[in-house]
Length: 286
Image (cartoon, rainbow, N blue to C red; front, side):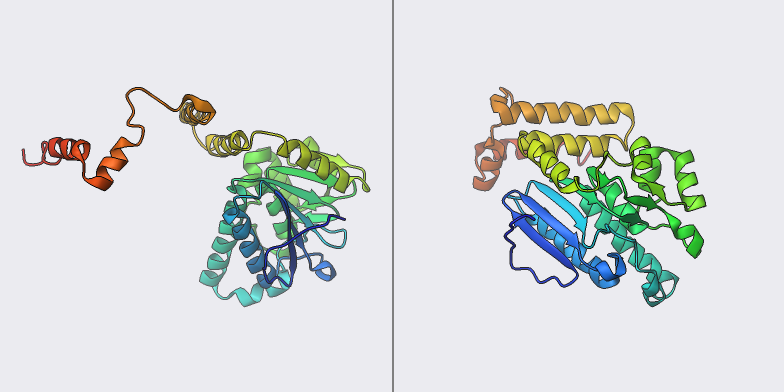
């Protein structure tokens, strides 16, 4: 077990802890296989917000208590979501949670043991790395409940493993071994059942050894570029390269302001007056 220190946060259904640059969220409803109840989901949203707000956390690890990662949304609560509009509002909330997790400017690692199905699998797909035990099982069994996934089970999955395999996973609803997820490139690694913690710790050590600004930029341009056409995504690469050059010392571009424009605005100085004087009415009345 890791010795951890935590900020003053009040959680009942998950554990949140920070140890230096590493934060850990442990879903803690083992009697319900860590199913995402409304209350647990609300706490998970708050925990993700805490990680986003931190400037000291560099890596987030998400796992589950009781040898189960997460059995998905708590189906027994779904009738309390309300009418069709209420369901849509709840799904939008969960989509926002998954998007926030995916867009964290930290590296995220899902440490999976036992079941990761439905919403649990959707959490893993929003993470940057997924390491699982060989006994872990995954799938999208919503079809047999008569419902459809709401926050990644069709959308993120299709982007990760393609349209055909996403149909197989969702339309059949089977449960698959961890090795299959690795084969499909849905997860990164399947390790011996007693080796999950050690493998995750080793991965975190490697990640923390990197230039963290480069890591943040890489995550950003990969996530954004994969949703764009080639030339647009190459634009992200170019801008990232320029930012890297600036961070590494090459920030003084001869025909840039070096901040003088902002200073002139604040002080209403000569540079600001000249620029605005030239631009304010240019072609505006012709």
